[in-house]
Structure formats: C-alpha cells, structure tokens
Image (cartoon, rainbow, N blue to C red; front, top):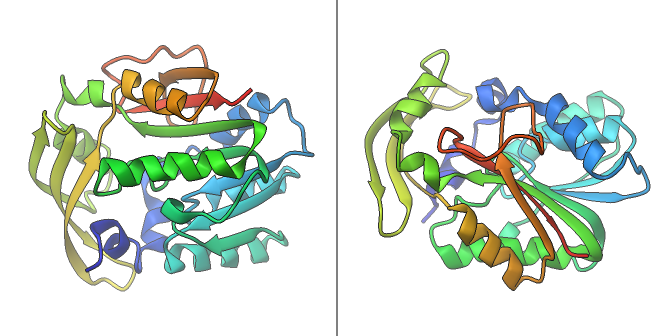
Length: 254
C-alpha cells in the first residue's frame, strides 16, 4: 500500500512548482553557499530534491550536486529542467531510508521536508538521518529543515497551511495534533497535474529542538545549531521561536 507522500507526488511535479514554499530557492542557496565558504570543490547531496530546484540552482553556480528522491515524477521534471538549462546533474531515484552512499559528500542538504519528517514512524525518520550522515565525509556538514513542534503548541497547523495556500488549491480538513507522539494528522484534497482529485490522509512528525539535538549527538555531530527557517531567507541571526513553522538545523561532524 502506498503512503500518502508517494500518492501525492505521483503526478504533481508542475503543481508542486507552483507551491509558495518553492519560491525561496535563490535565497536559500545564498545561505548554503556562505555556509560552505563558496568552495566549489565540495560535493553536495540533495536529499528529497523534488523537482531539483536547489540542485539546479547550486549546479548553475558551479557546484557538483547529486539529487535523490523517491518520486519518479518529480525526478523526471528535475531532469527535464536541468537538461533544458544545459546542466549535467546526477539525479537518482533512491529511498532516503536506504541510501547507498558512504563517505562521499562534503555537504548534505534536506530542505522543505525533503523526506524527513514525512515517514510514518520515528524509526524511519531516524534512518534518514543515519543515511545522510553515512553519506558525509568525516568533516561533513548537514543542513536541513524540519517541522517545529513548538509551533504546534501555540498555533493551528490547519490554519497555517490554509493561510499559505494563496490560490486555495488544496483543501485542508480534519486536523488533529497528537501530543503524545507530536504527529499532526490532516486530510488533504488536491488535484494532480492531470486534474484528477486525490484525498490524502496525511501525518507528519513535528520535532522540538532538544529531540533534534539528541538525535544528531547520537550520530556523533559535534556542532549543532538550530534557528528559525524563514522562506528564502535562512539566517543564523534568526532565533527559533514558537512563530516558526519550520526550524533550520546546521550540524557539523568535525
């Protein structure tokens, strides 16, 4: 049986590119470049790359990027865009829970809930962190965003999502947040690229900063910093608050 995130992205690449959360790519890549000191000799792994927006932008700036995703539809769109722009990017269909990379990359990025924390169990989410870590070299850096559990204690996820759906393209219903598991359950009604309506029963794991810190420490990261994640404007000056829907995590193995 397919999970909701597999069904969502079966035929949703063009609709995906219209979503508001895909509009901050250049600013986010500006931040990534600063974090790696503009060193174009570094190899970058983009986990849950979707239609390749970060991979493509970083490749245009001269970086060697490998993008992986579970969705064939999204990757086909990524390849189509990259080829049209004369870029040679290594896009691969891979499951982030079972990556086959080891000690190959200087930087791993996983942005806009690129696989983590969409998985149906905490163990699967942790597998993604483990595999990203395994893919990194000994002094590698890991930059990712994830859902901020502190937000859910003060705000409605349903209201937030509805407010950020500018064209009312998605219907949000039956929202429930489970305090024991920090999982949010919601029913989404969408139309895919062919106009077919899909009703998806979604659940996502929200994390609090102390959990993320503990998980990363267990994977031997030495420097772990967590900030608020502003769309298109990642910054180390943004202290995480309960107003931030996402948090930005920067972890270094060295």
